[in-house]
Length: 148
Image (cartoon, rainbow, N blue to C red; front, top):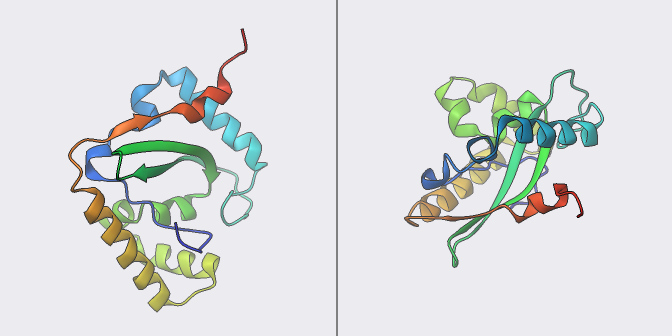
């Protein structure tokens, strides 16, 4: 992860469907996302802007040596921050200009810094795509288990 508050999170192609919504029942996902919204207190957890509608975002780390995709946390973010995080999708939708402006504003950086950060994210993505199969570590979810 970089020194920026707002970063690109390019998920390796082989992990695109290894998200919580694909492995949990809808009721369980609702509990997790609502917990993130409550922790956020009506503000984006990245840019701190008040938002009437927040979106739940899963943060993952990638242990390339052991080939493990690990859930680190679920945060609540505004649509603008979520568009930057998932810049590939945003580019496909034709909304990159707004995402560039938001990235630069939140991170107090230049367009050149944006390009450099995106280049680094793409390098990481290309390298991670060379791993055929990722294991999935959802141990972060243990905090939601009720004690016996």
